[in-house]
Length: 124
Image 1 (tube, rainbow, N blue to C red):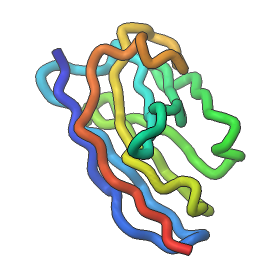
Image 2: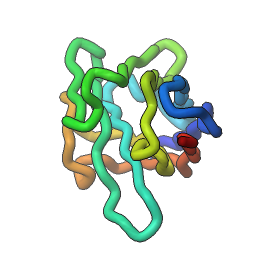
Image 3: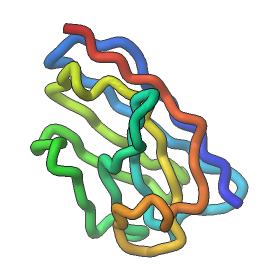
Image 4: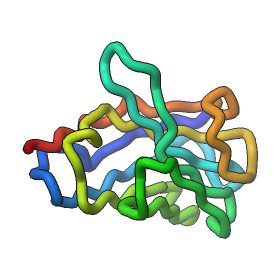
């Protein structure tokens, strides 16, 4: 029963950077793995990145290609996604999610709380 609110999306040029934030309320997320997913209208939601509850593990989708970094500040109940070297293909609505797992999971069914999403548009 965690409420998640993403922010930081916007319009950026190819090669630019954005940092997305996901603020949690309702309860601490320190015991929850956290993830970022993205979705283009009409397409399936896809995994982007995940981080363990203790922030000692992270995992990224292949398309990230070293460009993104997921991090978290459990004291602030906030998770971040730093996105660099953005491509047009990164354009999507980005969602953060809280998992009942402690480890970083790529399986969206493992996540039981989702934010409303923040739009990222990369112009070419």
